[in-house]
Image: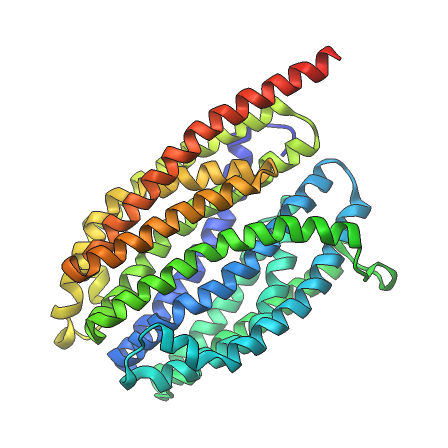
Length: 447
């Protein structure tokens, strides 16, 4: 990404990420549709209540991998292949122990966690079963995310897409057979998810050792570099905290939603699937900005950094137009996918109202994601953590205030308030940061 047209690089990098994430989200939505239609609204509510906990783990893991990916992108851009390998080894070894600890902790404390979320008694047992099985797949999720970050750091975002598609197809086929045709319960949905995680991790390992010498670790390479570990923890802990802010916020929001009854819980589960379709491509474009900026920072190409960022924001805006029109036109048909029509009225109406409003608000996270991608690529991850914390805190506070009066419709306004304040912090900071950076560059040239 250090030469050539910035827009072309960003599009070619982001499209595989977008397609992969949309494919994964499609599976998640299909999984919810299968669960809701063949097991019932209680199972749909259970998977919805487990989802913020699962997302907390996944985003925490991806935060560490994202921090490592920034370092690997910088090393690749600077042509430091040995440091790239050392960073990959350090991240894999450290993360394996960390993910195993997360899995054990999650299994042991599933019931207290769900108790804090006010999960209704009628769905508590099946939610516990589902969540404990999902926890078992945590180490495999970490391995896949680390190897995918390594491939993306060298500009290969297509290969992780292929593995994601294959594992998601496998997951979906197993769900259709075991749940749709053979009528197994909610535990089967969790088991097929873990199987898909194992397959994606194995495919990534096999591919790297057959095709990518730059990332192949020999026996003597497999060790933890303490210096790089400190950098990885510094980057990774901040990005993990930032990534974890969102699901922690969702956990607290889910606690408010859970007081409204099973129908509203099911409706909220459905609309959050649609939200994911809106947010994830925006985040994929943001990751493209991060990699572009990090590689050019490593190559010391200041002008291209600014060009890549501005082109990325343009892509974010065009994507918002597309998702806004889609949601406005099809929000009710989408809601009807998730539930049998005999039970639809109490679920479709609040969900459709929520999505109609959110369609316009999706513009705000498009810009916040673009700005965050820039700062991550520049290594200024403290500002991304602080701005995410501000946004999440305000969203939770206003959700608690609005949900008792407006139901899940109030969550859309709470989100908009959080994103608006986030932009009011990030935009002025960006101009101050760039002015200071130009002064520093001018001083270094003069000296």
